[in-house]
Structure formats: structure tokens, C-alpha cells
Length: 85
Image (cartoon, rainbow, N blue to C red; front, side):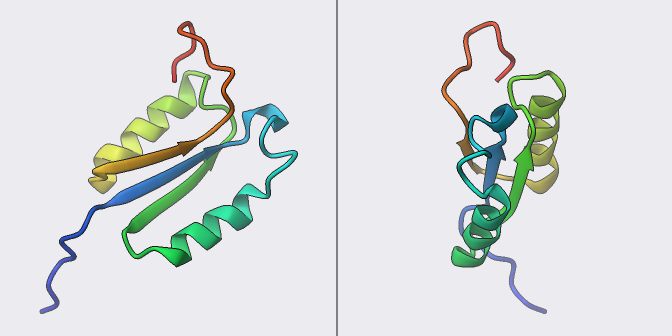
């Protein structure tokens, strides 16, 4: 039986930010490249809006479900304390 990897379990999450990011960056291509470039990256996902209620809840669920111990979020800087991110 193969031994389970012992390195970090990294999740990378991108936000389209209503076009503030996705109008300038091909997030799907970036996601594929990142996942292929590092064996510790076990999950990559692109969200529409991490500052809305549904997306942060899904991000949290992914972290728990996949047992991630490192998280990278690529998003715009427009979030205020009133947002959910």
C-alpha cells in the first residue's frame, strides 16, 4: 500500500471579483498551471464573489472537507469589514 503524502495540503482559491480580477487574468488557466506546478496543491477553485455570503461558506467547507492546512486566496482588495471574507 502506498504511503499517504506527509507534506502540506494547500488549497488555492481565486475570486473573479465581478470582473475586477477576471477581466485581466485568465483564472482558469492560472488554476490549471498552479495545480500542475506544485504537488502540495491538492485543490484549486475559482469563485465568483468571495465577499458574498455563499462563496466564503463554500470555501470554508472545502477547507474542512479536504483537510487543507494551507490556504492561498487571490482576490481584489475591495473587501471591507462589512463583507464576509
